[in-house]
Length: 114
Image (cartoon, rainbow, N blue to C red; front, side, top):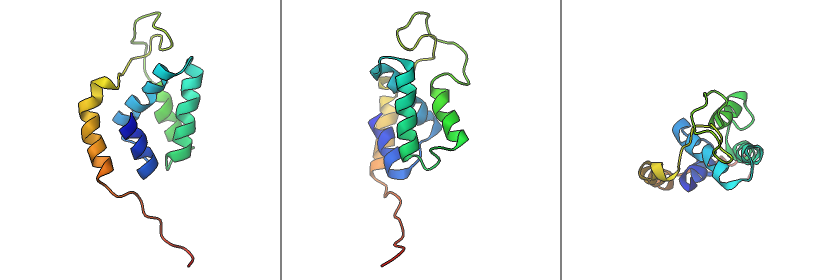
């Protein structure tokens, strides 16, 4: 999750696969789904280059089941029937991703006025 957030802050974008892991992690840390969605949208709007774009909303809401059928076990706290995606399951992929993010230069903004 940390690598995905660093990528969002540094580059203003997330690969869709990483966005799923990033977005679903909020459900583990919040008391209810509404708070999880609010946190994910807040960070997405703040750091993503397309933050308030309709497609960006779709990418975040997909993490919370907007375009997915019920998959999880009934009665799971907070997550309900939402397909789970544990951050630990993607740790190997995440460490490669973190290396790629940390070894690249972020966007350099041009100097407009001296």
